[in-house]
Image (cartoon, one colour):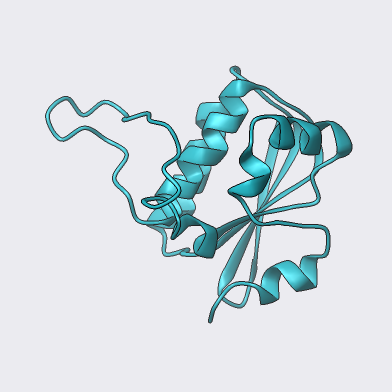
Length: 135
């Protein structure tokens, strides 16, 4: 798995290459969290070079969406991550700050089967994706 970043006005583009699975999903989350901690507030996740996403990868995408909507990810008492189902009402602000770009057909199909295509905004054009973020 390779991860790179580029910045475009008020949007950070995180480009993944390879497979997103249980061997690397925590790194994907950590790198997105680091960008957020450094001031990024809008993230476009470029999946053009991702050939496979496991359930762990899908959880990483959801976790990143929660990060960029400003939600806490750690239990205040234990310091452990909080995992929960997507709540369209509570997580709706994530759509404003986290979007997907260019998923390959196999990845697009997985997103569709699990229902994430109705939750995440998905683009096939970089310029349209960047323009979709509010200034």
